[in-house]
Length: 279
Image (cartoon, rainbow, N blue to C red; front, side, top):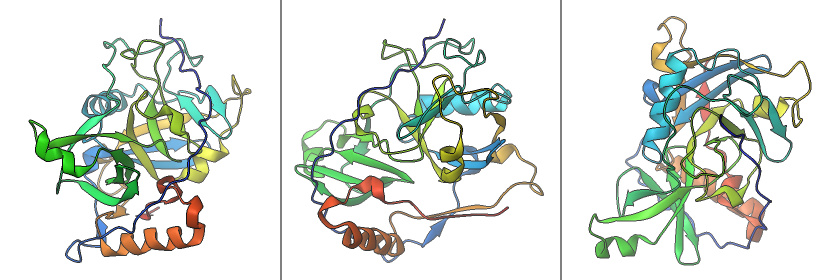
């Protein structure tokens, strides 16, 4: 039996000082995500398009992709939805006690990122830590300066549970994630380094926030009508997805504008990564 994910208390947000991002002028403004790493979730409330981030959680990305391709998620409900927190789904029993017949996953709460270069787009600092993005996923990491002192030339990083982030549900055992996952409705920093973040919504956050709230959610519960990997959708029916490259000068301007707007209250989770998705 798979126990349902249970909420943690909302952590207080500390003041952060974020330096402006320095982006390369040679990086194109828009990128086309790998269609193997894009989920198209059709719900009764509308479409959600999410980009998976294997750099942060390869095992969880592979599991969700595998189950989606098997049709496992089609028709499953959002059985537990908390306003200001998340919308949970992915249970064949639709009550938080079920899972797939596959083995549980080891937690991928942190990952190793190169000290310089690679997929990481730096965005600023919070004390001695660095903030930035891996694709659309906001992350926090140790200082890049520590990379020279590590055997693999990398530093520890972890996904931030910003609005739209996909996180894997689990029971008390940190290695008990299986099939259940959740879409973040709001920023929830207390999940960082204790739950696995494996992707982020690039289109359809308003759909996530429109899902009926409740523990359990009231009948008839909202549901995922279908969950497909973009690469598996026939070309003539496949939506076109483009995401602003978080390494680009254009995104640096988006970040700078949000910093100026919010001042000392700014948090990296306040920044939505622009995307263009065809209907």
